Image (cartoon, rainbow, N blue to C red):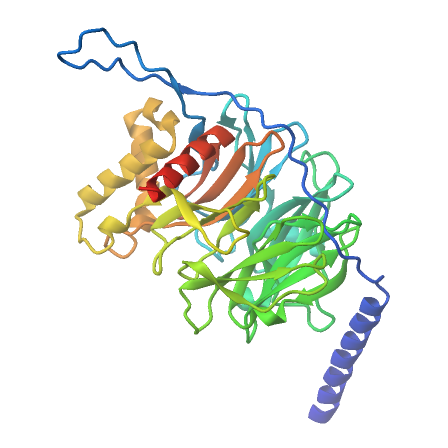
Length: 465
C-alpha cells in the first residue's frame, strides 16, 4: 500500500511538472527593449522663504531687504490612519487624474492571519489623504483562489500598457515567506473596483517562493516586467515578463547577481539600458547593496557589482529622472534601520551622494532611555511627520503615541525603524515617497523639483569647499 501511494504521488508530481512545462512552452517568445515612462512638463508652485532685513552697524547707507529665496515644496503626512496595528511594505501608483494611491499590509503583526491589504488615495491639490480601507483580505483571497491562504504580504501596484491597474501581492499557503506565491487583482476603472484574485504561475513545479517589492515597468511591446525574488533554499533576484492579460510568458533569473540578491529595483534609463539595484543578504560583505545592468533591452544582464553605498540587508527604492540622474531612498548605514536617506547619482549609478536625511534616530540607539523620555521623542517625531496632529486633541495625540509604543518599546529600549521605501515621480514632475514608520504607520513625503535642485546645489557647494 505504501509503495502504491508513493508511486501515485510521484506520478502526480511528474504530471504536474509536465503540464506546467507544456503551458510554459505554449507562451510566445518575449520581446525585449524598454518603454520609457511619461513625465510631463514640470509644474511647480514655488514656496518662498522671506529673509528678514540684514542690518549692519556703522554702514553709511541703508541696505535693502534681501530678495526672497525660492525653496520649493516639501511636505509629509501619514497615509495610513488605523491605530494600534502594524503596517509595512507600501507601494504607490499615480491615477489618471493625478491623484496618488498607496497600498500596504496591515494587521496585528506581520504574518498574522488578520493581515489585510489596505489602501488610501492622496489628493495633491488638497494635500490630503482620503480614508483608509481594505482592498484584499486573507478570507476573500482564499475564496477567490479556491485554495487555503495562511497569510498575505507585500503589495505592489503597476499600470499595464492598456491603462489597466494591476495590484500584485504575496500569499502564503504553507510555511514562511519562502513558500510564497503571487496573487494579482486588476482594475479597469482606476481602482474603483477590482477583479477576483488570480494566482500567477511563476514556476511549472510547485509554484512557490516568489516574492516582490520593486516597481513594475513596461517593455517596448507593451508587456510588463515585474521585479521579484526567490527565497527557498537560496536567494536570488528574478524578473517576470507578463503579457497583456497578466500571464507569465517568461522568467529571467538574474543568475549573475549571485546568491543573496533580494528585492530588485529596475531603473530604466532608455530603450536599451537599465540598471538593477538589489538588497543584499549574502555572506560576502552584506553591508553593500548590489547592482547589475543591461544594454540590450533586458535580454541579458551583466555580472553583479558592489554598490558604492552601505545597506544593512534592507529594502531600497529608486527612480530615474527625465535628465537621467538617479534618485534612491535607502538606509544609508551598515546596521539597523533607524536612519533613512535620499541619495542622488549623476553618473548612472556608479557614485552616490546624500542629498537629504529623511529620518535620523541613530543617536539614541545605544542609550537606555526611560519610557517617558522615549515616548517624548515619539511624540516629537509624530508632530514633525504630520502637521495635522498639531490640531488634534491631547487625548488623540496620546493614542498615536500609544500606538507607536508597542513597537518602539518592544524590547524595553527605545528602538526606531524607517524602512521599505517606495519612490515614484508623478507626471507633473513631483516626487512621492512612502515608507514604513516604526511599523505602525505608512509615512508619505512629497517634494518638487525646486526643492530637489536646492538640495543638490547645497551638496555641490559643500563639496567645492
